[in-house]
Image (cartoon, rainbow, N blue to C red; front, side):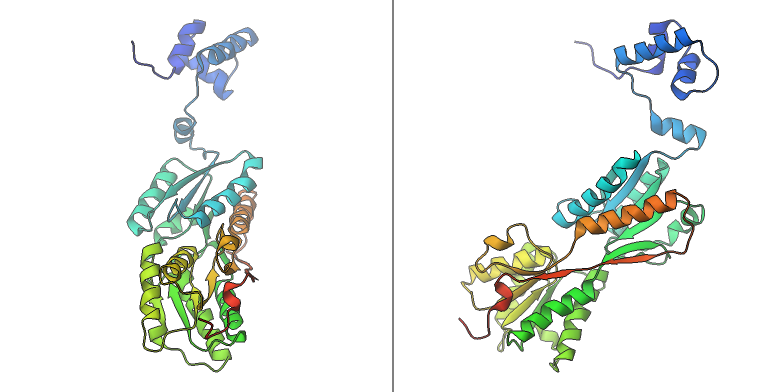
Length: 340
């Protein structure tokens, strides 16, 4: 059996009995072509299933592709999937296609993926920065007018539009909630690295709430873990302290899952928990998870609106949009201390 291949412009030209240049004129609407010839070319295109190579054409004529490139740290994290959905829903009506790639939370991979998107001349670039990444290399593109928006975490070394959640305010509200229910020793399980923007902001909100209640900040009550198992291990280390916390703030959705797993393994239902980020099955847990809920779809939609405004000619100064969080009370954050 012969190997299947995609039909080319030459195949279309051969089918019609014209030159490839004539086919190109029809498809790109470049120059005069007889009506009958145009109709025959389009019929051959439909018959053969020919698909023009838009990226090659755009590169040849110096045009932008009708696509937006989005770089996220992890495709498997539901938060970033929902962010991408928010972007896609907002740009689809404008005839734009969203292309998503993962940096694997690695600065080098992020830069390589950005270079790939720029090479195909995307209409706009959207980036959720990887830990330890920097963005000075994008200054020339921004000056040249390419819309660039950062999501969830701001750019490093570049002044650009960004959309973030109210991380500090949300964490402060979550810890204040635990304090209001009688807790005085509250642990924090955050992401890695310690310099990550969202981790720093949420830890600062944790400290703000302690300070507002006149409680000391204790380094021993702060632990880290980037994935579920690491967060579970961090939780067990906190519970093993001589004077363990009676409540915990989990710094993101993966940390929340890790804390829940650790408490379940230890048979502990007496430790209050507020998770930063909601979970799909939060209400099914025992007790149901109290969470500081972000709105990742709104983050994506707000970032898309910034991109569309720039594409429409907005040349105002770089803007930062902060999407509010909300505290969802379900039960785990309302446990009083000493209820084991």
